[in-house]
Length: 200
Image (tube, rainbow, N blue to C red; front, side, top):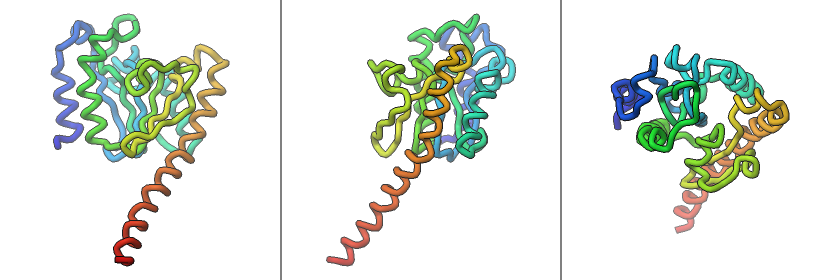
């Protein structure tokens, strides 16, 4: 399977949406290719478009503080967005833009093969928790095909609404125990299989 660098090249050449004409840089994502945790935001903003990197503005600084609260640096996780180009004037992503970029995000998930996907905001959440409301499911996790899906408010929303800040901070603190539980279960399974072999 091709790695992330080949995918980045393909994203940089993409002209499928109107917003490709107004972007300064594509913002494919960054982080550890073998990260346990993949954070998925919504769309690049002004600073991200300028630098070609995700979460480098105020929301990015808050995300780094949140990561530090659970003993992680951004280099240890992978951070991406649902769409890879900045919508003009930071408007919401359009359905066609989300659809056009979806294959890039799916390929990132395939390459990184994370144990946990954390959705940041409602557009990211809608991809993995269709029909759900973020106010009802934030801070909750679902496990599917050995991947934990965990919904959170977007860090930017917490900066605009102080009432959400405590929710975001509390939700982030749940991540280590969820990962630890999944590791324990994954390690227990091979041992159980070995015991069965000896019993035969």
